[in-house]
Image (cartoon, rainbow, N blue to C red):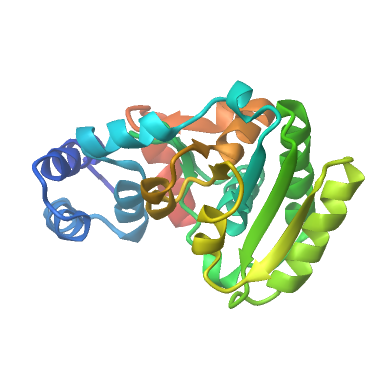
Length: 230
């Protein structure tokens, strides 16, 4: 399969910068280069026009900015990114400075042994940055969200962290309405938040930074093809 990924990224970025809607630009570029679902997902989640990327980066805070703060965590978004790293799936450093996965399994997530390990890694990261309080929000319409919230609470307690985890309707709104800083890489949440901490990205940097691929890394296309073939 021969995909001109670098050209597709440039074209998509250009169209976004010219004010085209993301969905329209994706269809145009995806059809032109005959991209399959995985490559289109990469463009949609990771490529941004210059202005929007700049706005996102302006909201992104560092580890030192989280010290002593109350953190609202977008549960599934953060957890699935770390799980993807543990499952050896592509992890990408995106145009806007955030680190994202390409799993697209939010609505059908089911806790596994990988979930337990991912939660422990996130807890280790939270201890390291020294947050004052944390609250994870999981979408209640997703199966097993209640069990996942319970597992998250246990993990936080096990690491001596002050915090909670709940399954709620409209988790995005709950995340935005709680705490001082939001932890998410979801573009909709980033657009509405004042300050955003990339908890999943920072956790991956701590645990396995070699897994993070930039959009211009030649290895990225090979990883995407491996994901498709696997």
